[in-house]
Amino acid sequence: MTLLADGDGKLIERREILLVNGVRYLIEPLRKDVPLVDRAGATLLTIIDIGKNQLIVTADWIQQCIKHYEDIDDVFQRQFLQAIVFSGGQSDSSLSSEASALLRGFGVQWHHFLIADPWNQPCPGPYILLEGYLHEPFRLYDDKNAAFFSATRSFWNFDDSGDNHGQIEIAVPSRLRSDASARLPMSGIRVAVKDNFDLKDTKTSLCSRPYLQTYPKKLKSAPCIQRLVDLGATIVGKTKLCSFAQWEEPTESIEYTSPWSPRADGFQSSGGSSNGSGAAIGAYEWLDIAIGSDTTGSILRPALWNGCFSLRPSFGTLSTEGFVSCIKYLDTPGIMGRDLQQCREFAASWYGDSLVYSGSKFSSLIWPTDYWSGIDSIQNEIALKFVSEMESALGLQHIRISLEERWLESPPEDAGHQSLNDYMIAATQDMWYDDYHAFDEFREEYWTKHHKAPYISPPTRAAWNACKSILKTDRDEAARKIDVFRSWFRTTFFNGSQPLFVMPIENVGPRYRDEPPKPPTGVHSLLLASLLESPELVVPRKSSKLLSQLPTNRSTVSTIPYVSKITRREEHLPFVVGIMGVPGSDMILMDTVLACLRSTGRPTSVRTGSNMFMQPTVKGLL
Image (cartoon, rainbow, N blue to C red; front, side):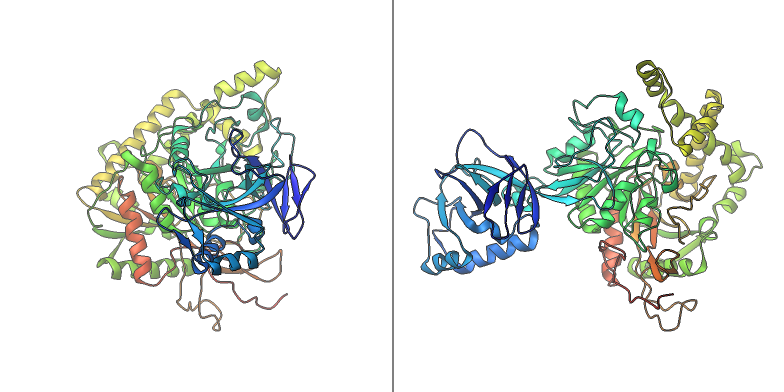
């Protein structure tokens, strides 16, 4: 039964939602076997855990508790104070006279002390009581940026056939539930998962209608996602991706609308292929962490264009079982978030027993000139300021190194006299043999079931057509050359040392939704960490330096300014820096960057919306 409530919280039976003071909720029965209290009718209720040592509940304590609820929880609101159940107390617990007066002032109609087994009592937070039985409210949020493919719970859920193109709503639980289960490290954390990971009782779509229609709902979740659930995280839904995790810009997203990046003018690319995860993190305050996957920059690019922190972990740290992989020896799950400390704690819990922690300090800062030479001078200056601050924090001096020159000075024997680019360019193309053949079974099953070929979007079709001609022997040679390159790089730079590589992601400039760019080739900056099996942390950058190239009246640069062809005014694109470490240095990498940011007074978190940090003053409209 769904209920509506007017602005005063009066419940009206009507349909399967609850409207309280203009906020929509989805409600679900919590327990059907035992009533909480003997009460008829329907009541908006809040459960408050008073603890077993508190005999007299005071007005000050209740006021502090309600303020805490309002501060941390977007599901709770004061309309849920029609009644209060105090749990966890003793048989002689009671209210002070001032507390009783306070409850009357809140409009509390009745209260009750629940003495129960602390391991079996309901969690704190807002509820709906129907004929004595508890129902849990989930706040409904519109997916305004089209970041999600489906919701775990939603009043408007996605049609399994893939024919429903309407906007969906995401239902989120109260964060107060975590107060009673703090023993689980991820309790209260809301997580979105890219839709190339299996999630129990849902279909995996790859943002392809043919793929969605070919396979049934999954009987179990991918182990790395199930681990999140076991640790107490709440999976709120599955995010979109570029179809089949290819490089796909918004103009090429035919079957499903590409997610809308919230940054700048709102009409910029959201990157790929983890674009839904990035857009959701950049847009939605109610979401904490998004899980993406990375093959050759699939997390790094969305972190740039959606302005957030991200981590591509060391390869092999997290299981890829139950995850639709493109190139198994490169693919890894990864993390996207707005708060670096939260990302660090999340990663430490998620890694668990597979955590590789190196306590060694980083030995050097390396600025790879090959990659930064293609980045514009203003962005170089901002990144170098970050490097300067890291030098001060770490007591190091950065070193400018050309990988190409180092290769020519001391190449692997296998390379002969070939340059690094000449040696690797064929390998970085022929390795995509794996991506094409990863979907052989799908193409065969779809043909068998539907007696026709599946629809494939233009970039995926072009990529697969190119891959058809790659021979298995060419693929094996590509894998061998990648091993040679990895061995050379590790011997040259990682041998007995702990360097940090400061990496660009891409040159930042307007990338409108109607302007698809050309993908890079060779060992580009997005590919390096993948080939090396290294962790790479994407760090949104805020600079306080006056840049000579910018107007003299601009004293701070937190992002990259440009005049939008959409809004016809100055907008601000995100700017980020990639920090790559040696394999296994994930945690110390995050700890080091956190310490550097804090020591220089830089933000360790970003905002949602058009600008990562401050809201800039709008300059003259054109």
